Length: 247
Image 1 (cartoon, rainbow, N blue to C red):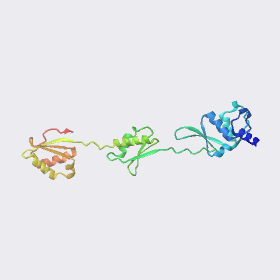
Image 2 (cartoon, rainbow, N blue to C red):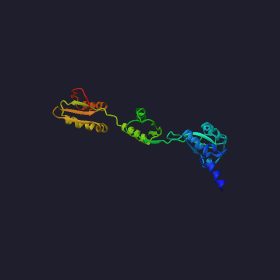
Image 3 (cartoon, helix red, strand yellow):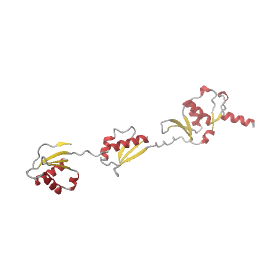
Image 4 (cartoon, helix red, strand yellow):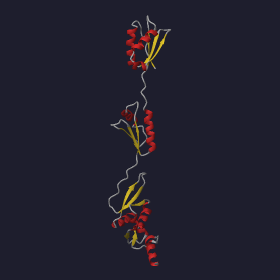
């Protein structure tokens, strides 16, 4: 019984290098590799620690990283360098000479449906102004903007930037004047409303001034052409007193 306990201590316990046996468990080699390289050795399965490895190394100064790798490889144990999701380096110990598959990096996704600006225009405008590591593209099927990145917080900030950039275009609105001659401005205004299309009437602002008998119209250039045509039909003697002023 004492002999058995002594053998187990020699195989697994820390013993002076001068007393190292010729056969050791692989766990001792993994510990030396971690000490020399400063990198963790991850086992594909726990039984790797108990595999026996024959070695004739007797001196501390004979232990080198490359030599330990060769000894393990001669016994069918392979150490593959790997990198985790955070960029840390380690070794992956297995009985297969093929390296393990690379882990699929985690990515966060966000989706946004533009309401005012075309998706392609938003992507073209913002692709160079998003946080580092963020990808942006348009789903051709749905028209949604897809944002992806490794950091969930960066993806959230990118989505907020896209949302804040999705603003309705500024309407071109000009102040136009039409002075009625031989007709009260309120009468011309009422006739104009009856003949004006509903869609145009909803987006145009009219202010009739009695003192100057002038109708002030706030609208875009296209709507003003329609309104001016109708005003000339309603009050042909009327006139446009001066240049329009931009809002």
